Length: 217
Image 1 (tube, rainbow, N blue to C red):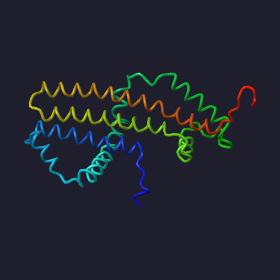
Image 2: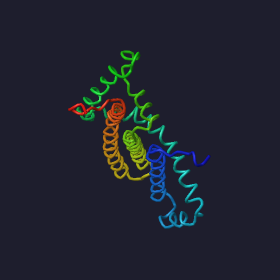
Image 3: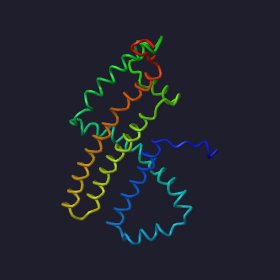
């Protein structure tokens, strides 16, 4: 059964690395505002049995990432998307390519569904995943999820410092810095999101097109 377990890039980037980043930020806040010193924290971690470090820690961090991910998803959808509406959209050339490829697929490869499905992305993504044609779009998807989660964690960290620190100057400055970092993470996430649909469409068409040389050979 263990041999059948599959770990995807989404699991690594959006769950494990998010959990690791979340745990690191909590540890930093705990050291700065709690009774534990960095040396005491490191000594406690180094004293853990190897089995916990190798097996239990990755599972715990992945679980933490799975808990953080839905909060980051809803925060991005209902807060960041509204607050950062002024941000520039993905490059026009990506949108033009996406529309061109989608129209080609709608008109030639959907059969009786042609004209009934306005956005073929879902069915093309399922086709590409089922036939394992490409992993490029999964790279984009996993990085999109990671940077989206980073935006959420930086904002959460900024508000945590604002609440925990006794100085309004430090708390306010930290919040502003975290919001600036969230803008960068949000923009990077949108970049990777804009790459996904063209990557899926290209993989679909590469499998469907009949490639013929100019001389017909």
